[in-house]
Amino acid sequence: MVYPARVYHRVAMTNIPPLSLLQTRVLGVLVEKECTVPDTYPLSLNALTAGCNQKNNRNPVIEARDAEVLAVVDTLRARSLVIESSGARVTRYSHNVGRVLRIPEQSVALVAVLLLRGPQTASELRTGTERMHKFADVSSVEAFLDELAGRSADVGGPLVVRLPRAPGEREARWAHLLSGPVEIRSADAGAAPAAFDLSLSEVAALRAQQALLAAEVADLRAKLERVVAELGIRL
Image (cartoon, rainbow, N blue to C red; front, side):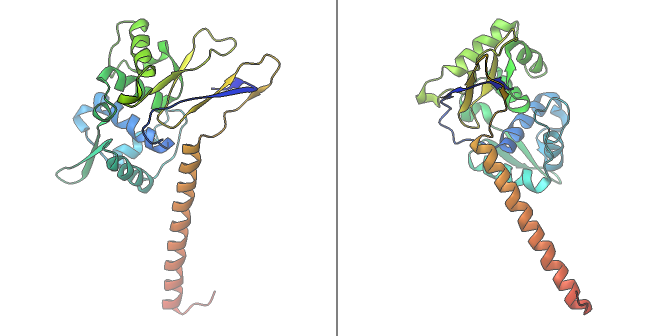
């Protein structure tokens, strides 16, 4: 979401270490698929990667590879947010979000939609969570959001924040805090719209991806050099 801005303030996040974009995507997918495809849950790595790269109901749309998703899963397992189980033929993965964050299933569904789709209004969240939990009305959604936003430090701190209503919008949007503080730009009628800066966690994710690509290029180069040496080819 883009807001015109000149004045900034930062909203404190939960005391859980910030998660990267791909980490939040993996968690969101696991929560979603537990409810929407229970027959194939826990998910295999291939299914999890496909869910992360899904085009619909995802913002932003990404293109992650199995190796990247697996690396992220390992970091989430270390935080007990993901559980690994051995199936008949493949390793499968499930989430442990509710227990780690100490929130009920209704709140898990709301957080999952925010992880998958970015900032949403309460009405959009009610629609987006329909297959995970059916909220009676928008006020029920707002009650759980207020609870998530008002969590005290002794239970992990706030998990969501209510963003200022943008000019021309009828409802305010909500954002999750699992990727670090949300930088809110206060509306200024005389200012031109400006895009959000990348969060620190997103920058870290991009750097990690760059490092992974560099490692793969180095590996391919080494293999090519071995093949060239074996064939006696001069490049």
